[in-house]
Length: 127
Image (cartoon, rainbow, N blue to C red):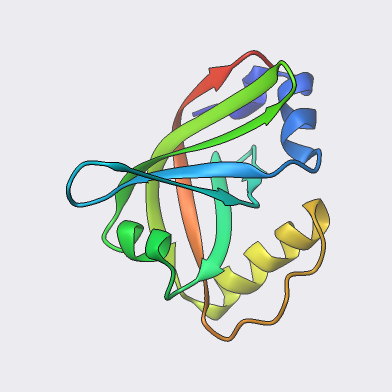
């Protein structure tokens, strides 16, 4: 998906420091919604969430899953929908940590850290 076509306002909104919600689906079909920090790579069409490999959200996407990532700031909002996979490779984790540091702050050390990598297939929102 060409996220760059969404424009400068969209890109700026995803660079601003906002917490997001990540929605995954439990085996029984109910939503699992949690707050997360996320980064967006416009050129690649990929969003990333760092988390512990032992977290429930990591377990829910381990085999691949459809997810939604949403951020809201007053009346401005944006949701990214896509397919999530779990990345455990050290270079993938280090890259995601560097991106997180740029948007938020350095994450605390976590030897169990993994990356939820979301390939964006659809966007919703008003920015």
